[in-house]
Length: 344
Ligand code: KG4
Ligand code: ZN
Image (cartoon, rainbow, N blue to C red):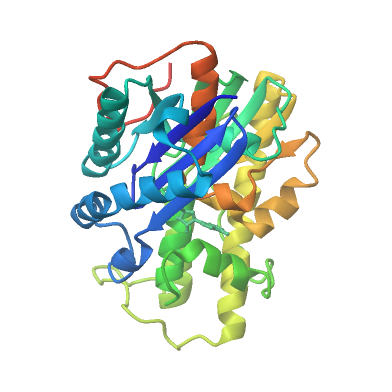
């Protein structure tokens, strides 16, 4: 059996996890900072890195304790070293390098976005048929990948402005709901009419695999606060104030627009690469409306178990097993890198 201790600190979650053989999650400790950032309705990088410093050692200890293993029983240390906020990444990367060096264990640097895709393997050990189209939809990313195997992941489309999770968070803010907005809008949408308001579906060129969500977000803003007159700013409050029923209809109509766009782009990507399956990961993959719609997709669609949709370290410890088997280790001078991958 191979056990890997994974560390995650790319954004606002400090997490550590022990995963055996690439799928068996022995522990999954996550210290969320959502409360610290809630009043700013978004992640404040300086606050995030400070909280990571405070949380990293307790979270690693917790992951080891829950897994019931000692450091000698760990075969390698993995860390999501890109992409993310530089101050946040540095904490996890430094902790992982220090552990690897002091314990004499191999270090494996993982791309956080690739790890989101791998999260579908966790717990059930189901290997999706390849080539697969991968969609990572989260607060920081909305991107499509061609996956030929877990180590051959090619970017084929990405957002040209907002990520879809970011659009959910901003729409929640416009509607006066809490943060993070995705789960709240998702719940509210279930009670509304998705056809109540026809929000725009931005598909870009006929063949494009890129996304754009900023027009949709602005359409929701104008629907709620009115289109500003030339030379005026948009109102800061809805006029007249909305009741529960109206809020639910806006949430459902916004969600329907997001899902229509995602479904269309997945279809285009699947045709482009003759995909045998679809893999969806990232925070928005928890969305109930998206899951229901993609259940009707003509190819098998793989979602992560709910616990591994949002940021966690199990996904990187799982993917690291593939690198471990191929003896692909990282040097101890592994860097924290803010970006993921450029399109070829
Ligand atoms: O993967 P994640 O934890 O962090 C990033 O790597 O960005 O994703 C967080 C994002 C947030 O924008 C949150 O609002 C969204 O995922 N999210 C959802 C749902 N649960 C989380 N969006 C839509 N529906 C959900 N159920
Ligand atoms: Zn993420």
